[in-house]
Image (cartoon, rainbow, N blue to C red; front, side, top):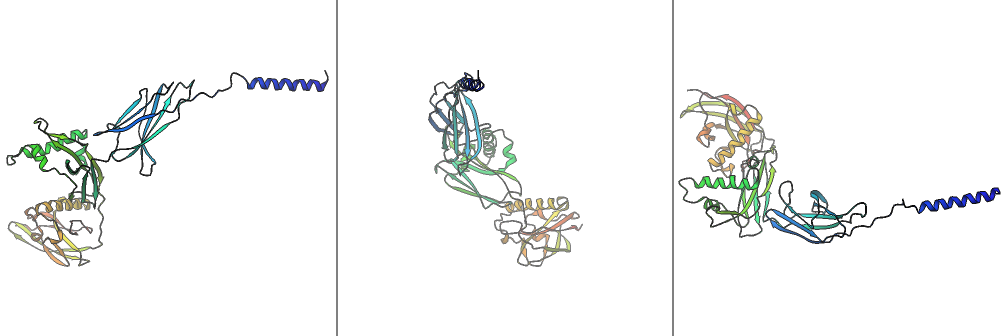
Length: 395
């Protein structure tokens, strides 16, 4: 065989081999894909607790279905995955309980795919459904918040619904294992305690209802402390004819957990203090202190604090803030600038003149700290606290 013919024969043989290789049984063949599921239901079936149901038609050759529920932001972006799973059923029920949290008035995205035998079929394309939960039966809003005060507003979706609302330290709420236990033990327990008082001629459910609300409602509180955690809550209820269970809860416990801001001075006014005299008066020490503010327009309060309550600046501030809350209740103070205990300009202030209640008088022979600080009409401390330690006069 000539060389040229031999080379041509080899080239033809090589092409044949390549052709056979291209048609080999080992070549990958694209598998068929399952049909995309058809959602036939996505609905909220309960508000208490929030319960969502999703249902779909069976997909031929599917062995299971994988699903995922995501919460969306107001802009339609995914905020977080609420739950995900796999089922052989044709529906799934998602309940706001345990580790699953569903909120009112929130858009959720449900994604579902059909899953088959990977050796013979590909999973389906996803089907997606967006759904917004019902508006809350009670909408809670906090306004005008300061380190010690705020306005708490409740707006019911049904103006005729009776409801309870309050704000308490979060630690009290956290003692209970569930919202239901909190209502049964803490809330109902409080009204049962009131009803047990001999001077209250009413059953506990009647006492509870006397504190109930309907329609839009706002209450204000000045009982908080700075940098502290609280819970504002409300729940709807109905009175029943069942003597064993006279109060029926008709909504979940709606709640807002919040932390008060840290205290910060809003005025740069400072105070110069000097003890100018003491005398014994009716078994107490009447102490005179000269107060000179750097700004005569600043309204200020002078308080006489037992020395063991003012071991450092933080302890003094905590005592002053707590005492102001107590004085507001005991002396029925709504506007501090109308109180005779508040002064402005350079003054000689006596302990008896600022003792709004008897417990604020200075005991004989005891160490004290006199504290002076700016105060606004709502009882907010506006300046840093100036202080001076002294020993009260003895008999």
